Amino acid sequence: MNDNIDTSDANLDKVKLSIHLDSELVDQIQHLTNDPSKVIEVAIRQWLRGETQRDDELTRTIPRTPVPPRGEWND
Image (cartoon, rainbow, N blue to C red; front, side):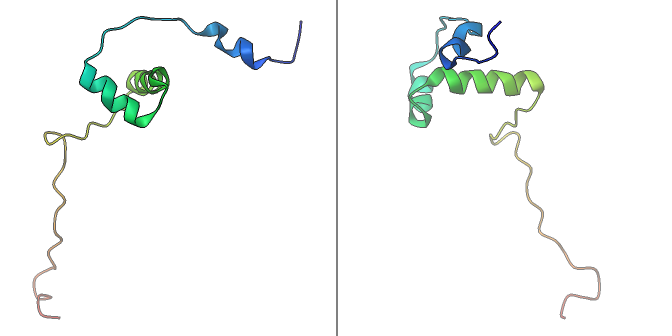
């Protein structure tokens, strides 16, 4: 058995998959990288681990402005 790992063999555990994506989504992904499969793979891994953090208007928490305790308004 060969202990040296050839980098060309690193893709042997990958599966080629064909999917249909919205063209606008593909355009946004292509702004990030020339290899959209890597972005999609990372996103799926994060989703499966439960690491996704949505950043849309319905999930944002409003930052609260701290109010000083009573009596410290004019310090």
